[in-house]
Each structure stands twice: as structure tokens, then as C-alpha cells.
Image 1 (cartoon, one colour):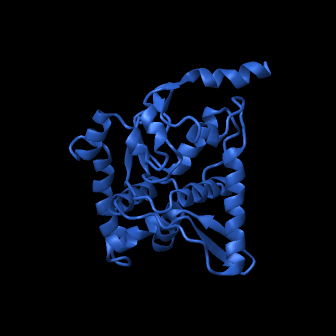
Image 2 (tube, one colour):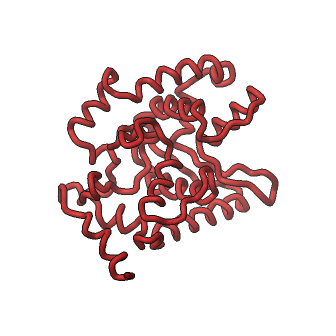
Image 3 (cartoon, rainbow, N blue to C red):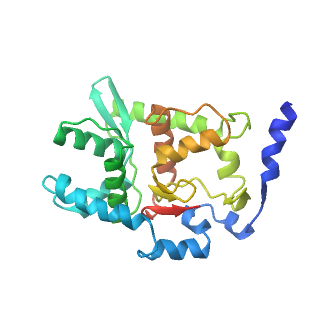
Length: 255
């Protein structure tokens, strides 16, 4: 039975385009079909346009009074996750959606989660505005905060190479060792974080990185972390730092 569990996932892989596997510093968009790329470029065909329209309305109603310059605010997209200090001895990693949810809660006196529709819509708008910016995740300067930050990086690095789930697979086995190959209907891309949130056709809606990571856990039949968990934030930091210097693609389409 153990031998069966290890071998079965390998049968799903086959070479789709060997040239793609030779360029590890590619975004996920490089692995889309020509039709999907064209749909992504055409706002009349791209379903993400609906979220962008809603985002513009929310920006004017909720954010513009405090953050007058959308382009300046969008720079946060390529800088998060960051360490948010709660006290001199504690804190946590937060991503962009966490920050949006916190701002919303303070402004409206209503606590909402980081995966609430309003938060996702604003994240889509900021992501689109940040398109073309260089990813710049920086270590904290404060030695104590840097220590906590590095601990999260180390944790995520361990998770990235750890086999888990009933399929006994790790992140690196797919996203470093099988780049450019087909996994069922998907082409495996490198683990670079350059274009979220995504509209995934299998979801028929937008989803943030948090949701995509949990789908990966589910895909290998591992225990799925709760939405917003520290583990998921650590992995996001690791992937974003791994993508440092790459250009942000904005919200993206996926199969």
C-alpha cells in the first residue's frame, strides 16, 4: 500500500513543453495557453473586469478619503507580507488582505475576515494597479523583529521541502522538479508569486493565495490549515521572497 501511494502521483505527469522547464524565473502566466492569455488581456472577455469595476467603487467609497493616491497605495502589493508588531516581544505576519480587512474594520466598526468579498475585491484592484512593479520583500531592520521574521522564513522553507499527505508529495517535487509538465489538466509552473488574486475557472470565481495554498494541501490529501493561519502566512512570505525582483503580473486567470 505504501508503494502504491508513492507511485500513483508520478503517473499523472508527462512532458508538455520541455522548453518551459528550462526557465525557472517565469511567472505562472508563461504557462497559460494562447487562448487564456488573450482572454486575460482583453477586458471585454476577462471575468476579472467585474471585480475591478467593483473595486473602483469600493475605493471611492471606503479608501480614497485616507489613501488619496491609488498607485502609491498599490506599492504595498509587492512589499507584503510584513511583520506586524503587537508588542516588543510578540507580533505576527500579515499579508495584504489582512491589512485591508483591518482598515475596513477600523473604518466601519465591523470586523470582517481577510477572505471577505470586500477584501478580495479591493485586493484585486490594488493588484491590478501594481502590475509591472518589481517585487520588493525586505527583511526588517529591527534585530528582534528580524529574528521573528527569519523564523517564519525557516518554517516555510521546511514546509516547502517536506513530503506530506497521503500522496507523500512536497512543494519542491512539483514546483521545482516537474516544471513544464502536465499534472492532469494543469501545467506545473515554478513557485513564484507574481499574480494574485486569481480567477480560477474550476472555481468560477476569484480566490486569494490563501485559498490556492489550501487547495494544494487538499490536492496531496494532507491536513488543510485554517484560512489565515500562521503557516499559510509563512509560506506566502517564503514564496514572495523567492520571487524578489520579478515583475508583478496583477490578478491572473488560471485553468
